[in-house]
Length: 541
Image 1 (cartoon, rainbow, N blue to C red):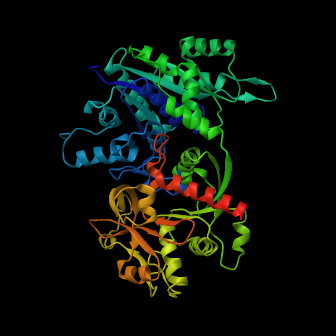
Image 2: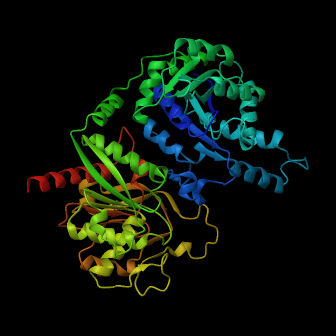
Image 3: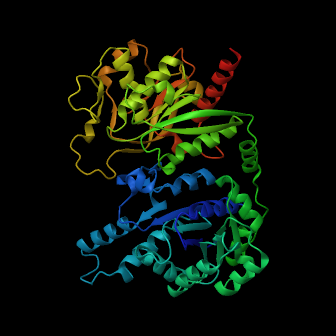
């Protein structure tokens, strides 16, 4: 195959319809047919990346191997395709404008007036085709963030219009995702919002090739015919996307609807063999038929918004299926004081995960949770800040350093067991300046970590500014806190653990970013297995 083909996914009517899931599901089906496929996301906000965004604003910030702070949809792409993404897979308006302004400052436009068309649109088109020029992919799926008609999305829509024309016949298609709402009072589905959305798209010069309709109820043949007629698409290109019990069902639903077949036909590509979804369906079967249920308390400070810990929640789904267990993740806000009855808060909890985060809000609650898990022998897992809280708790309650803390929370602490990394001390800008991306970690053989990974050296993704203070390492290790994972280049403590405990581990990195359907992350799998074993032991005891 000579030319890379492009699929653009736009959204209408309302945001949060699931463009990312539809894009990931289509990519999965094309991949299962033998096509080399990847997905990229173009976001219309002016932030250069989501790194400085509050999780309440935009959900979690996903991190790639090459250290890009990206949109959480890239997490879905990786989880579905089991292929790592990179800096090139996520572009924001901020990044586009920054690049154009820097070119203007360097005099690259030779004194021309710099405008949205052609300068901004050319920059967008160039970035849209970047992955296609590598020769690594047959099909590139590009998700356009936001909704058609949004002011901030206009340059992207115009870039898609130009690119579709430039690429020529059969080399690109546009999939438009819309909502077909059900009006309970009238007892019927309404097509008008979709018609208006398609009209807005056409006013921008783009004709949708495929309509994917989000709906709570089945679309009748008459309704599909009506949508095809009024939205100027073929009847076979009206695809129903009905609400599913899990996002992992969507590829199967899209296969049933023939989304991949219609897309390939419009791109003039052969269907090849039927999609091989054997492994995917086995995962779905285990997910839907658990043999046991466990309750995991996720203790964090952004728990009101599910998307704040999206990758963690998905990693539990993968690990649960691997263990044939349904994992109920119970969100527990860490803003509680020592005086509150913690046993009441953690009642009925079989395992505890202390989540990542930044800043001092809710810190004492996290430290108290670690103490409770350690003393009561409840399986415990701390990620990034969660690992740091475990170090502080141990220093305070075992070493007797009651003032022990992180310099992030208390610059005046007498025992800074967690402190700012040396190279971070003179940094003023917050965006893209943390320790980011994949770093190596050497694991001690006689350890829980080695038992989990069964490897001497691993590579995991990071996103942090503060770290374990090695000045206290010997003291803590002598007191029983095992430092079982060390970065071979920096000497940074990556993993801490406790022996003689059902399961107690803290990691400085973010293992949740690397968990996929095909490869559930070993720490999550081991954590769920340990909770299951501990719960069964408690029942039989």
